[in-house]
Image 1: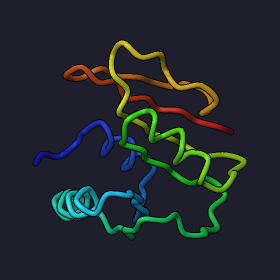
Image 2 (image 1 turned 120 degrees about the horizontal axis):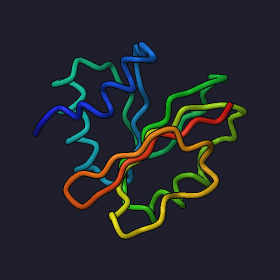
Image 3 (image 1 turned 180 degrees about the horizontal axis):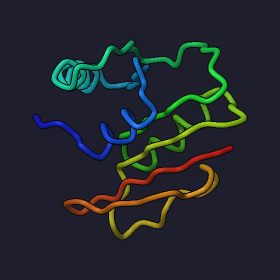
Length: 118
């Protein structure tokens, strides 16, 4: 297990104090809990997105692209947000309709993106 500097950099730029982590896989949630502890983040973990009252959330999605499409539809609509997403093979087209593409990176055959909707 290792720290993820790409995600951490974006989280700490916004000075987030906590995060909500959602996954359908119990093993992935356990792994995320270990990473949160390793990185000193306070998080709420679960299988379903809770109702939150945040006018500009930071959303992190680390799952394969087909799962992201399903998860994205399950999220509430936000008028603005920052989205960090990974799980896209290098040969796959970047996601559409997530907001303005701010940055992207490739690592070990996978792509990650930073989107913002304002």
